[in-house]
Image (cartoon, rainbow, N blue to C red):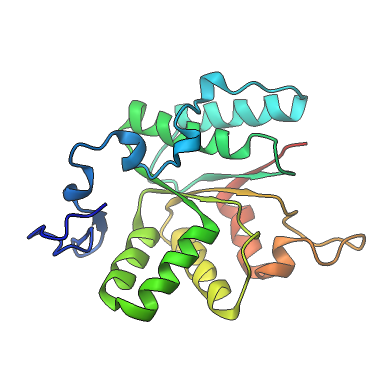
Length: 218
């Protein structure tokens, strides 16, 4: 939580440094790095080393995540998209990547359940424009952004516009984005509705294919 009396951010929790928006240090007083990365308490114990794959696809996903951390270059803007049904450990893997990047590379990422992120942005947009602007800039510019459960939120025109803006900005500026989703990326003749292509747009999904390695977990 931000310090409402902080003279640096004036209680917003964000500091605009021109070409980058950072979390203010007042957020991290007496907080551990789990909170710093915005990791939900349920996943505080999640690590790449304690992920237990039970299928070849899960083992493949774990190896991709470990290789991603080992070879991570913040200038390349590469990320990972984990696709599969619930209870496959997608969130566990993404949290493990964020922790490993922070410990091994000193790269600070930020985790958000997509529904929660959109809820906070909508709340700020309706009442606190300064916080809305700072939060949106932070999400656009943070070195690594994890969007969990993309596509499960109720997609109004506004939320589609926000998600399109975020993904397009991060794609254009080569910033790494980690994504989990229960939806197939591209729509098929067998299932025309349950795809990110249908829920967001073909253009956004096309950028995801270019910027991220897509891993299917079943």
